[in-house]
Image 1 (cartoon, rainbow, N blue to C red):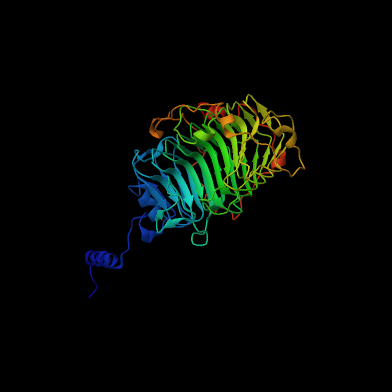
Image 2 (image 1 turned 135 degrees about the horizontal axis):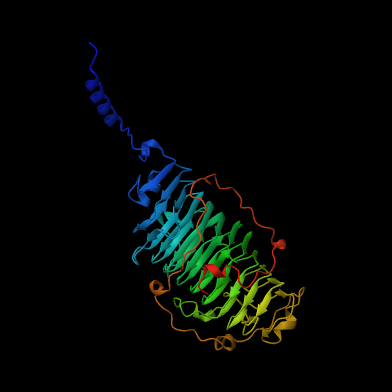
Length: 436
């Protein structure tokens, strides 16, 4: 006897429950390519756990009090409004958005008030828990045990008032940090660390009111830093070698066409006070190209050369830069055991010690004269800093013109610009996006 429609409907529901099927488009079984927050998922973490590889998590305006870990490949996490979509740590949670899978995009949102970092992409993690260095807990992570995460893009992100780092790429390759803003970090606004053959582009960003605007530690080329504004920090930017991370020494960056200066900000967290008032610090960095930047207004030194333990600053070239308003354009305070060598400067610059100037000629591989660190240190006294939570919040920042589309797989290699075509930027570069 044929069963009735009502009975058939009941049986269908029972069968569906047994099989675990669902009509919910955001359920794991539906393998969705688009998950919206809060329409389809109550939290951002719930959404990134549900979204399919290659999919989009689109987050509506609102304040989301959570930390988010993205462990699915090729996911795009995007806010509908850069200033209105906020991941808030409330001064308690350690991180905002962490990507531990290849191919992550983070776009068009704000990440604020986390105790460690705002946005982090890293290959170093224990399951779904990120393990990148933080605070005093530094260790040399084994890159064989923790292969670097591949392919990432962080753009149109505002990271402010995060305790250590705003935007942080560690043990990661083939990525772009672009058109973003970072302030209020007690370590650095933007940080790239521990990668060999990094293939990373840092461009169009503003970093201000940080201990350090941009920091590189043991991250080597190809790595291009261009078209950024690093002003109003305690130290504008650094290129560092260290023994706490793998792949030392740092080498082979191209730093071209940036505004680097006006260091010595008091409206910032206290840290890095040994280099307070420095535009560009190179500590044990090797073979970096510093070209056609505007390095201005630094009360300690425009460029500071020094060693990291037995690692010297060596073979760095300075070409076509505009120096102005610095207490000294280039200073060398390297230790006798690791003297600066073969650093090359074109154009006239002021130096400390004075004997350094003729030794900066290109082609010479001899040791270069150094001054005692105290000679430079007394030029700029570091003011007392403030809590990262108290640093002035930024103004509105430009967002994406469209929040749909643009979901194609990130390329295996970044298309890096031809730096030979990049000139000295105007003093006003990106000045409308910051307070300095």
